[in-house]
Image (tube, rainbow, N blue to C red; front, side):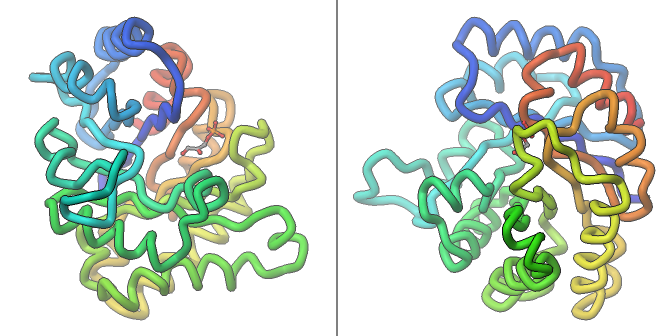
Length: 250
Ligand code: 13P
């Protein structure tokens, strides 16, 4: 059975002090279960502190983004190898905020996905439709396009070392969660799309849902057959709420 993955994406929030407090509270309250992996993705500048605090625990460290290039004159960027240096195992690529606010297109996201794997990091590829795309009835086409952009260049086998997060843009930070049925429908579509390329990978890959996940709705989302965890933003900034979501996954 594939273990659940509950990932906290802290985005650009917190301070050195509050992040340390949050990590400690999570470590103190976490009940370790064999079938759930817990991942936290702090801002880059808090990776070192967080790595130190997590040492010896079961909580995994991840980053929120990675540069598509290996090294060189890319002012302000952080490479996959640098993230490896700080004990990161996962990295989010193609988050909708990166796509919409920093103009990251499917091609760049695919390059970041491959750069992550080249540095032995596990990319969490984010896909999701906007409200306008959903209302136009193009949700499936958008998700397929975003997945295909990566599988076309990285190959379907690359999904054997990746996770995919379905994050409908209209549900991110809005308090408006997709219903379990809406989320399941897209997760099933994604698994089917991967299955067409490789059935073994489709069965093993973690497909996680993100978009206003909170303790009150996590259990019903996680109960769906193709939802293998969550990518949690706002609710992961409060230890008690995040711990309750982790518990719902177990
Ligand atoms: P919220 O949980 O705050 O809606 O954010 C979701 C998200 O973007 C996680 O990557």
